[in-house]
Image (cartoon, rainbow, N blue to C red):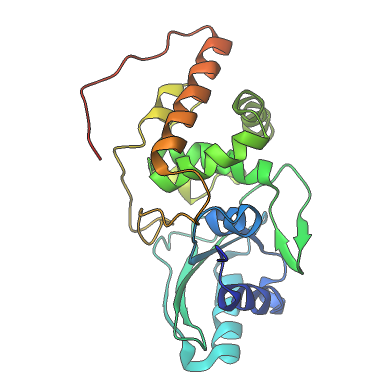
Length: 255
């Protein structure tokens, strides 16, 4: 079974072939599902490193409506503050009867070159990992931890943590801020304990979010329990590297 359905792959290619979306690359969990085939992912998150502003997003909406007609619907700018702090969300009904949530995010800086696989433009696993570290520290979604566990099987968490420090120093001006900074995101660099808060999932509807936090694992991959144990072990090693005491358990949760 494929973690990303052929119908979703078709939509991604169609979107990236639209002129107004040609500089957007696939990010988020669907990027990783496409590469690792570890869990089913049904959302499309497209990232652009530049600010296209409201005019750019309006052009996207125009192009998408022209291409998909009534199959594209529920267009929304949940943030809608100014040219820098805005993004768009909409839904596309596939020919096979699926409904796909699409989010386009701007000013999402990447350190590494865009990759191409099966003609789909992808953010690198390292760049996805850096976004996921910030997301996991603030959104506390199980999907983010599950994805990070796969990334850090390939790229050690300590290395990814150091890369996050590099990125934070490189992109530190007001012009580099994104919609995620509106919630005054905390950094795992300062608060590594946030990487262990994944059982307390939170989300804000005016920011990009998962459709749900249920993990649909492809047969043969790690279970959520296995992944959670693996992730805690990696964070423990990070704490040792940082010379910090690893936090003890706080109560008991059965999930």
